[in-house]
Each structure stands twice: as structure tokens, then as C-alpha cells.
Image (cartoon, rainbow, N blue to C red):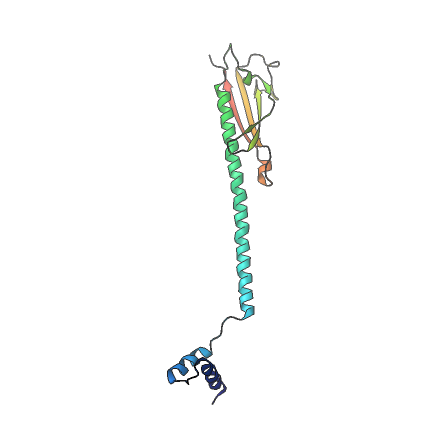
Length: 177
């Protein structure tokens, strides 16, 4: 009897004390040469899976940060649009000029969006955009053209690209009749 046959016989005797029949002996023999994964193979597989999962997690972190930046940018543009609509609705006629359209650099103010983000808004009104610098009402008392620059910036940006990206818009108003 070979060593393998004796091992099969011992395994079978432990499973069935009543004695082997030919079919049962063949079933045990067919599984005797099979082996599972070794401990080293399982550990290497776990390390490979762990590295892949770390890559996926870091990608999720990047995407979340990037989407938060896009959300902040879209809210900044909404704040700009609201401020531009206010300035476009202001009167600028030969007899009446609303206070919001007087020339010069306005005092910055903070506005809060519905999502709870705070934005600083700066408005600059140039009474003569064809001259260098910002012309106020004293330098050009009766302008026919105004260049208005509105800039908004997130008050408390999260670390990342949001700190360097203010949103700005420049519009020109001509005096109405």
C-alpha cells in the first residue's frame, strides 16, 4: 500500500467507522490532492485589495473636495448675478443717479447664501472707464458711461483651490434718456 492510500484510509476511517466501500474511497481520494490557499497567498491578496481600496478612497476624497469647490463657485455666481441685477435696476438718467451707482470704490459687504456660505462682495464704479484708475463723482461729475466691477469671494474658503478663485463680473451702463 502506498503512503497516499494509507492516508486516505486513515481519513476515511475517521469519517466512517463502519468501513469503506469502493465509492466512498474514490470520493475521498479525489479530494486528497487538492489544497486551499496558503497563509502567505491570502496575506498577499489582502495587501493587493487594500492598496486598491486606498486608491478608491483617495479618489472619493478628491471628488468630494472638487464638488464642494464647484458648489461654492456656483453660489458665488448666484451672488454676483443678484448684485448685478440690483445695479442694472438702479436709475442712471441725466437728472437722477441712484446712490449705488455713484463713482468710486464701495465699502465691501458680506452676504449669506441660503446654503449658509458667507461671501464678501466688493463693488467698484468707474465714472470714466477710458481713463486710467477709478474716477469718482468728484473727478467726473456728470458721466455718460460707467464701468461697474463686482467681485465676490468666499469669506472662509476651505483649503484648496477655492482660496485663489474670486468671481468677478464687469458691466457697463450708459446714461438713459
